Length: 341
Ligand SMILES: [Zn+2]
Image: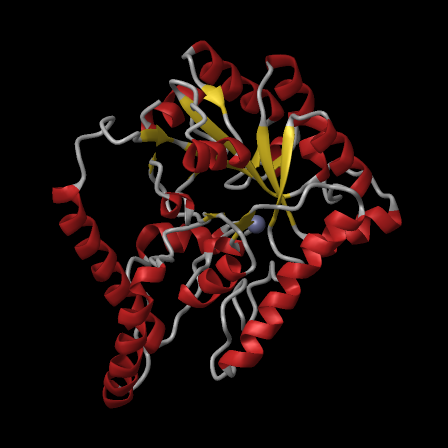
């Protein structure tokens, strides 16, 4: 699955983190190496066995990262608890509950279906369920308009997101969304967009959306195109867009800035709207990429922690939005009940 990283991206925690990092470096050095990220458990074990870890976490972390995870989590928890006392009851401060669904690939082939591959028929059932239950889809532009200008959101908003930009989204999701009058966000991996734009392959199993697909999807108003990195969708040493161990901070920032800008420029050169949202590869986030994407002007980020979001007029609320991965297996009713829809 794509989440439960335990890393949260709040600028206001940055200073605390920096202090924590130096403290933990000392502690980690004293304790030696070898402990793993908390919360590995069954979920992480399951993620590691998935065939196509499109957005899986389940990676090992260093002692330093593990300790930071705990400290960041505690920091956020502390902030959340202390903040709650001052926040008026839901609905009194422009608060809107926003569930966000996360899809990846759609394939009819049952043998391929799993954590990140869903039947197109089930996707249609999900969308019909949302519609029948009074939910209306929003995209990031709608959230920004609400936060910035107070442009009203639907009474029951929901955001449907597709990660990676698989060609089968065009093949199967686009017609369904069009027919039902719904919208979705697709976060593309720039290098894959370029590769398939150049080779022209259109295969439901392995192809990715080309610039022509994106122009059509975006131009139709059905899909909003967002940034899922140029080429950081790998679980190597770096783990998505995170800084590598031992990597100098300045060079990391230059590297990540360059990778992120490349997508923005590539899409803009093709006449597509500039993405306003950065979708972290594998949901892997820390304060470093969070700070860079803010500096680059992104106003929203998508993570992979599960949960429903509370959208307010505070621009901070659009960073690291929680999402529910939609695996194959559970019925539409079961998954929507889990989410609280
Ligand atoms: Zn992804």
